[in-house]
Image (tube, rainbow, N blue to C red; front, side):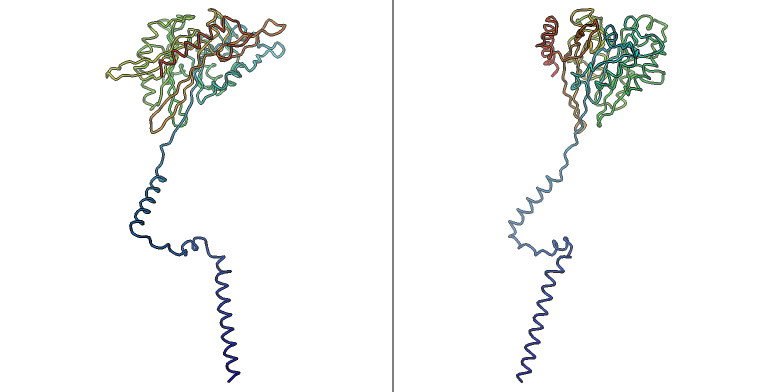
Length: 415
């Protein structure tokens, strides 16, 4: 009997050890191989809350989810820089001609303004041609060497306005060569065309913001714009029919903003003519948001202009009657030809609504004498940066101070 009890006890002990071993295996070994998702699903349920507390928590959870799932409207941004007249004349060419290589080797003329010239779309008005069908020329007829494109590219420029007084100095062949040379340098062109089917205006889609750019000219030599002149077929003239035609074309391409350059006014004049004001109204009436005047080679004021269209809708635009010069060697009227205005647009598009911030920066074209030479180094500076310089003439500093005051005053009218 005692032996039977010992055998039964041993069996029970072995059975308990086996059961314990199985439990240990389940928890310490197999558990390591259970997928994480299964572990989550196998977690014990939380105790049921009272109904009122449960409702509060469910409501809070739903509110939290609704905030997280709400999508914010996407925001798009683009920048546009606009400069006035550019042409290479006088010592601006002579000073950079290397006799040994017989090429033009320019310095970094724009190094001090690159923080403003670089933009998604950077525009300048080119008052010259770049063509090999006529000699290089800096007076009367303007023809620049291809090396000038290195200067413009160094400043980030990628769009040239060609509707200028000198675009036909190399005739139609010169126009075609100029367009080709600019395109090789990856600089687009507006204001001119090479066939009747084309338009002189273009749209640039930058980060989902569509920017239309048109360019017109009023001033041309009578040689080019005489009654029977065929040159009119290649450029947009500043008249009502041409304005309406080009701007209807741009509006049909769903532009968010339209900029128009206008080659107008009297050279070397600080005064705005009645004709400029009338054409500005015509441009705005037809949909232009920003008007950029050039050709006078002097700075003229800017202002906000409101006008009614044919349907009595009020249209509003900002008119810069003349930006003056950006880069050249000109001192016809002292000291005005050495200064210019630049305009920067910072655009933001959100829910199909476009907002724009306008910044105006006056610049000064500094011609610094070289040591032991009759030539010069040119450098474009911000006008505010010459106020304390000792190597700039006092008369230029006085004008810079007055200009900065005027820009501040004019700027308050366009806010």
